[in-house]
Image (cartoon, rainbow, N blue to C red; front, side, top):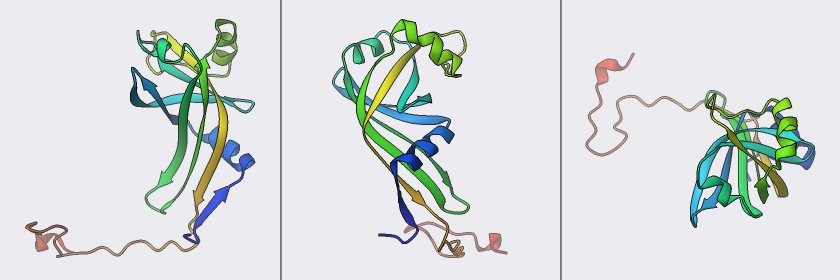
Length: 158
């Protein structure tokens, strides 16, 4: 394993998730895989996401659905970052809990459109952090084509 890669424990995973603004939710809709970038909040050890309301999405979560979720951050400058992911069960949040979730600051991305709030219960939570302990910026290559037939303008080299 890369010496810069560190597995996160459960507490570290939850700490990282609490700092992320956007996550990616994977589920099936009409038997097809769907991945959506979603705003979310943490409520104890559950993740609550806000989806745009559509005719088909409530059906996707009308029964308990199996989902995958991921959130992370990445810095291309330092080549450092983290990723936390889990699989679990999802279901539409009951109406009486929606007000509490809105009080936590979770809203749909598009103002004026009602959101569908979905509760995610984690079954398997894992995470990885890539540290900068041995990071060396890549050397810039000049004058070398990056693929056959590419013309490189050497006048751009400084």
